Length: 327
Ligand SMILES: Nc1ncnc2c1ncn2[C@@H]1O[C@H](COP(=O)(O)OP(=O)(O)OP(=O)(O)O)[C@@H](O)[C@H]1O
Ligand SMILES: [Mg+2]
Figure (cartoon, rainbow, N blue to C red):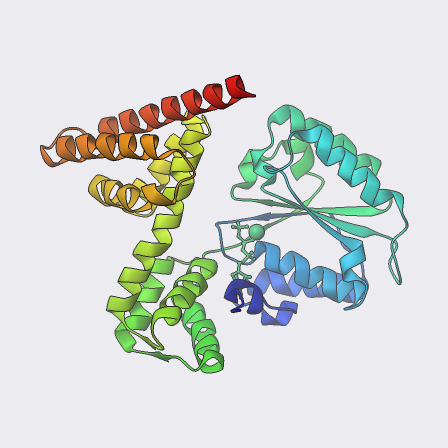
């Protein structure tokens, strides 16, 4: 059984977090005085927001107790603010263990909450301020309503610098007995684009294929890693959420720089992993084939891909109706 490196190499201490020096110094000061305000951690994916929150909790509460005094919730997993408030209430009800007078609630993806839900969250924060500190993790702090922002210290996490990714990757390579060629390293840094999680994930997938990490290996690897994203995209569409699927599509096209043909090729590769009836797999192969044909003939890429997504959404709906009629 191999472990997941982003967990294995998640820094245990604030000192282990690379880059973000300004933030880490402030967090260390909070840990030392055991005095933590409400916080907003803003910044792109894979830059250490969750890792910093956990490391802070470990240092404030100590290695044995941090787990009981720290609670992580994901705003986009929980169906609505009611569920979040319920969980916060349950957690806040019991007294914190050891040394401190407060617990920490880490709310991931807080910017996915609507303004109404945030207003409710604000009341919850106030209500439990006597024994809970909140850390909200967001991509953009501007998506958090002003009354919450004004109650929090806002820290902006930056993309991890190439040299910091390099150092971390070297540390992992040493422990995992990997050899990384110079252009392998350059490629890894290029693929990661400041996202340490991505750097580590791509490195791990590469290392599972070969202990010698070259540019070529990583290019193949990052192709596989993106096929996971494509799978998520198709499952979102099958689940019936067109707008979310469309967002994921544009993410792949714009942020990850995939071409329409790349995406089609990856969809074709994952069709057989989908949990839909074979008949629908065949349909999907036909539809992607048509889309591919139109793309090659130079038809508008975005329109063609959106139309394919819409057809997949429809397919998902039919499947759902079919299975609910059966039961
Ligand atoms: N600054 C960092 N120093 C060391 N490791 C890091 C850093 N940032 C990220 N990592 C590595 O990447 C993994 C993911 O980081 P983390 O969960 O903290 O990202 P995040 O900023 O919370 O991203 P997201 O916005 O996607 O939640 C960590 O487990 C760790 O292995
Ligand atoms: Mg996180």
